[in-house]
Length: 428
Image (cartoon, rainbow, N blue to C red; front, side, top):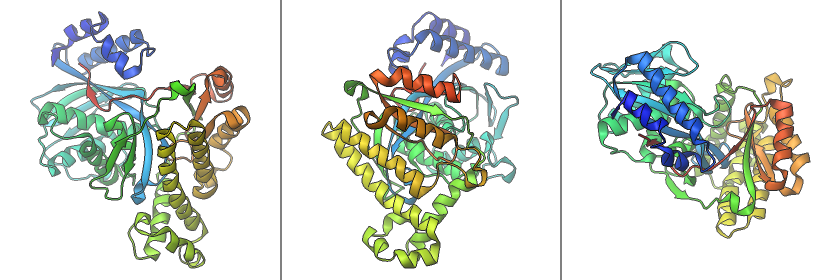
């Protein structure tokens, strides 16, 4: 840790520009990051007193590349960390609590470490996540302690880039660094984050988001055994193919749609229960196809379609990995488009059926299709129902595509992202 004012001066003098280049890319606007980090350090001082010794942490958001809604049924996914991140200015304290303030939000989240049981009154709040992550560390035999933090997030909240997972991993990264000597690896930090989100925050997410935010890079995750997921790096160098990863925020906040997400997992698991299994990964695909008529009667048509999506989507992840491995970008893009179509048609999470008047995701997908056609690919991003789409856009169509999306969804809606190699890290 470094005294706050000194660290701020070092950042503004460019001492950490090389780190910013690795986190945000050579074109990541080091001047903007210098000012952002220095502002956050200043805000920490205003919140918790000047003169403290502080460290600054960064955790990326993520994009799901393929494997939509397969992780919670122990499937296979492909995802990538991106250069939109959460930064946290943190300082250990002698108090037996974690105190945290966030840019753009009033009030403070103060969590006593003397009582770590879930609290119904905290469900859906950052306090629930902080308490759950602390309990997760204890469950793994880790040490916890009090600290104060100020958080600044560029990860689009409620847009499918996993702002909650990035926050969970951020709290975990601080605890891991400050109290555990970096003892826990990225997968364990991801598992702890998922535990906090499921048991404390109250959202039944899978494990993809947290593991990707903690690991960094483009990765595949095989969740056949969710207590020991198999994580492998995937070669994804879009620039070498003249392609760009673009996400468009359709401005439909999905933070109030937990029950819609839960229904996908619940319906998939209802199909698995028909076969006497806890999740679809344990059901042979051929057994499912041979029993579709009976599955419809037992679980309903939507559950049947969502199960079909799961089986086919897991296969697409394997095909996408193989395509990238042999340098077949055209094949990869075709698989991504198939994934998007399956989410829309079978998984049915392109918009909320209870609010059919708002269909930002389908509008963005339709515009992407008529603009890119066979030159690119497009799919909904993350949980769906509202929020963000992603598109793979060739260099020569990039400016026109972004201009169109911004004209429809707002000047701040469209982001060209870089894959970030590192997960949660201590920056300085």
